[in-house]
Length: 606
Image (cartoon, rainbow, N blue to C red; front, top):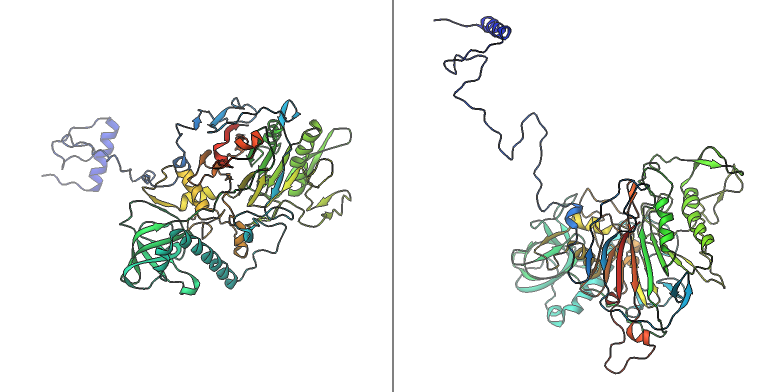
């Protein structure tokens, strides 16, 4: 019998290592340095990870990702083309490629040429901004004619009482809209939130989460919050009897169900909103040529420089259009060269030579790059009648970061003179052609974020805030009626009659950006009518889709994506059939077709 101690074991192991031989053990108990032959190495399970490696969390199919929001192509009117994204803007090979195409359902032939400009038949284009002095009020509701704000205002000074009063006004407005749409039968059974009843009742309120802090809603954490006059009671919604639903925080809903216990309500029916009617303006002028729109959203420069080459190429492509809609950011606060707060650019002397680096503020950078590009386009095409609409963004480094956002104007009236360079001014945004003239009219239209404008007979709504991304992360849907997620998110805005229906602003999701909402101006992001075309720039996949109420929702993408080029949208709006013929409609004939049936959309690479 041999006994082994620690020193004996270590000496045996060292001797075996020197000889580079491993003896085959007779039993697992007597083997000290080898591996038993009768035991095999246990394989790791397919869903496990070694303890010394990184821990990987399996991804759930319901988790949000931008790729999950891809809109499948429609067989009727949407044609997708495969495009390989470019890695560098200067070396891109896909400029001008069509990434998405939507054909018009009704194409009206034109037989009378308009004014020839640059080889294209065009007629004068008139733009009226909702809320501007002299602009026509919406036909359906003249009391809410203003969308957005007209100028800078004192923001983010609202008290708790002011915020509560603003939410109550929104509560009263949407309650009236939904009850009127539901009918007298549901209105007669209207009950405050939280009141017990053995009979089916109808309650109105706002969807919220059961956590007071951060937290995304799920099927077991959905609450309904009543109005301020009802005590602001919250009850849990049991949705097991519903076959389909799509909800998000801040959504105004009309709920029918049984609340026998008080804190819980078994939902039998759910109404998630009602859209405003489409514009029904009478067509008084004859138009014989299509209306051409170009829609583009920032950033307008690549992340590896500040040359603004994508913006310059975009202006070259847009010169043949009637209207160019530019949505910010124009000076992106997230640009790598702007995050430090110091912008250095090489200055030029009178003879064109490059001198040492100079520091610029964000306003001067906008004037040097964006304003100069617009002036160069005008100098190259002096006879062009292109009208430009500029919408600011919360990501613009030189502009007010508040929603609703005022138009791009001087933060200080006429700017502030520089103490070192008398010819320069700070906080001065020099935008050309923004003034009204008798010869050319007003060619540059500076609107707020959000904004709604009428281009001839077409009503266009736009919000540069990425509401689709925020709502996509906050929404919970189970077997929704609209299987296409991006159009469904856009339809939430129309049904809620709001450009930003999400509340709280991040939807309870930490990954979302905190949009600085000024609730005292909440009526300013309400939709007075459902727009014919709803433009929603987003980082998500581009899409063009007709919603259930007839509104055309559109995401044109971004002009610059990283160090490569992005996309923009070309819209061709055919005239109304009666408008093209120049005759009045006969009895029983529709006077105005849906604009979405007359629009052809192409989303192209810059």
